[in-house]
Length: 112
Image (tube, rainbow, N blue to C red):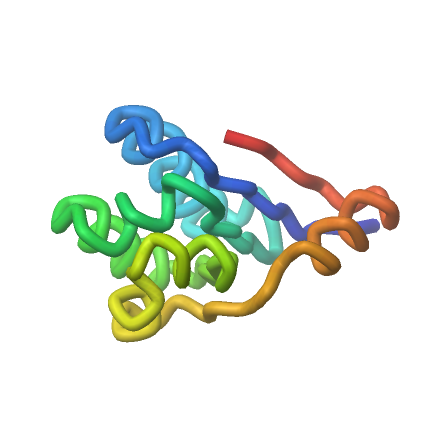
């Protein structure tokens, strides 16, 4: 049984990012709803994650709970936030092929 959840986070909406992505990812690990959670930061979410102090704090809390964060390098480079994400402990890699593989393999993927 695949017990790993991937959350594809693309929204820069502050409330959605806080009250859905961060809340669900963190609680999923704290309450053991999933054995693993990876948040993939893509597009506009990269700028929000890098620059909004409240969201940065929520990312740190989620990381302490065991949530893994990884960001699309193409997006973060284009938005000029790669270094800020890396400093936050976010893995920054090219995700195009990885996302395609997740989809083809039928992995659990929640898109926000």
